[in-house]
Length: 303
Image (cartoon, rainbow, N blue to C red):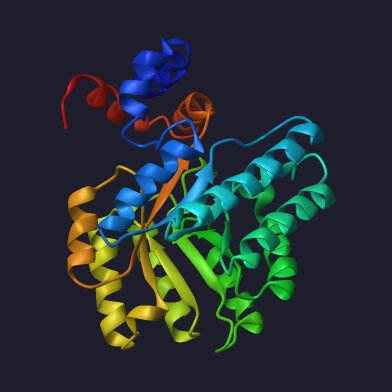
């Protein structure tokens, strides 16, 4: 209850105060700032995925503008030589307004990345979007098999079956590429596992299925038991280092990140940026009030 109260109050606090917390986890407001921070990560041997902050728009004019912004982001990042790819949220392109328009916009973004032999990750959002985003991924993957991937969420009870269903489009020449994360949206017990150990167990089961089916997993976790479990699966299936990667959020668990890189594993960091950083930060708190305690600690306790 206390965390929920804090999460409700923070959106009304001064932006400068909230930025004290947010700046550790957001790479800036502009693409120029994001490129500088992405290049710093590249210098440490870390790949990136750039993401423009924003979602749940209300007009198709916004969707068009967001597509054009992503096209500009790709041009700028490619010109700067950033070693990384791109992530996007379908609701940012109007998925909940007109899914066909959203598909056309996202297809254009993927085509732009493909023209540079690069890659776009379609983020998975809350459960009303799951089927639409799976369908969108399948459709775009058919046209651009090497240039698009998807996110799946280990806490959803359907995810293991969703991964298994995707094996029909997996091949040695074009691997299904999925970022596996725990999931941040608050979902009911009917559709999502709720307990920490239970979610971790299913996360590793999903990764194991991907290794068994020769898919390409992005292992997106900051949780040591999950990382250690992934190491064991990599050893069990003798998976070549080029057939998977670890992924983390910008500014989160840097010591663990460095230890993974030091072991010779590929690492990619999700680099969010944009003018909607304030909305992004406060929405995340509403979706997961447990984060509020972390915010308060970040505001008043160094480190």
